[in-house]
Image 1 (cartoon, helix red, strand yellow):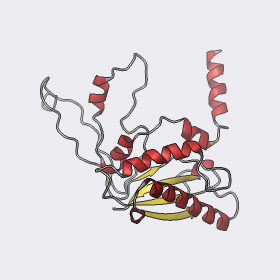
Image 2 (spheres, rainbow, N blue to C red):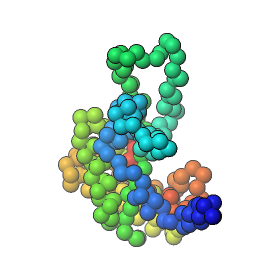
Image 3 (cartoon, rainbow, N blue to C red):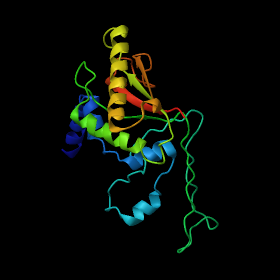
Image 4 (cartoon, rainbow, N blue to C red):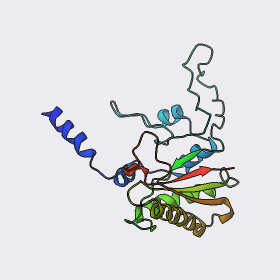
Length: 214
């Protein structure tokens, strides 16, 4: 019976719109964007020691599900502890070196009203967190490209216009918060850049991404 319920749950999830799935994900914080774009991430071991997990609870990564995709780079894996690199009880941890670089991109997980460039209320809250992070010292000198993307449903011409309008809507929202417009480049790619492994018509392709350009 339990197996049957699990199967029904998994099957039903396939029909949930991607926007709803994005909004149900764990909310992000300004620290998450600093981690993604500046590489200044909290130490996972320190976080776990400060907040012990309940038995059987899942481990939450310090990146909160960010998919970091810097061209030509890969985040180094933490080496397995050995007698040489094990931390002594009162030994201070070495500072973590930034791993983010120019070209880093993050899906902002923003949703819009159907067929328009108007951010939903939930998307405004998510965009506000991103805007706050852009004004922190760690990111204040960086520039970003706000990219709009759509699926392939409809004509390419209309999707190009919609993707540009949505990216511009996000940039306008950030500028209204105080982010200098010269730090923001706006581009709409329409359906031309679907996610790797996704059909052009897949809903996951409807997204706005922020790409660090400098």
